[in-house]
Length: 312
Image (tube, rainbow, N blue to C red; front, side, top):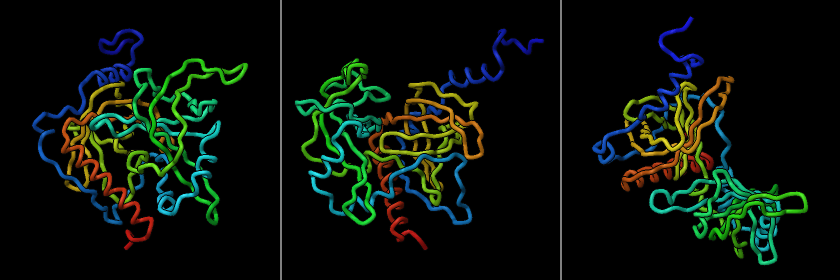
């Protein structure tokens, strides 16, 4: 027995997901986007604090106090970070609003005689068209220069020198690599640029598709984009343009974004959800500035809460 007029081999669920993916989502009017907007994070009443339905990714805000102390010597930093198999994070810096970065995990495969680092190719990959672009390379490591040790993220800015396919690491192994100059000095990276913020449970931070107001679950956000979870029946295709509204209290900020990737995740109850990452494509400089101010306020709130100043 066939239902309705669906082609053979096509389920209703599959057809619905295809229709949702093809439909334009969250496209607000130019008048809506150009309207002046101001938003600040609003605290939730303690009785209203709600636990997230999805296990959120770890963050590194517990490192902030360690960054405020005096750094180890440059000799110690370079010896610890600049060596084969050390994990690294690469950030390609872009112009305008997109100057806010996307963090790409990598590691040091090799250091040649000319002091050039051969880094593992990233995902998404660094392209040959990126050669010459500025990048920030950072490293997270533990230092035992204080009682109990401390974790620090330090880095430096450089340019992409080359993208090499099939670089030979040894007699049996080749890898695709990205080459950059090794640093002469390492400094603390700018937290706002390199770190993703997990929404604090005591702040009212909500995300919806705009103007439909379809609720989305905010997983993490950074200066360059954000990640949200959603019902598995919702589908977003790569490069799809979205308008998202960030809500806090009665305030709203509409942000233009483009889908980078989608994946399936499970919440803490084991229920399957969709998770989508987007990068901002903001054309309105005022909205961009408002978002950065909002992100900064959230970050300050986290610092105050950690130091005890945010407790009542």
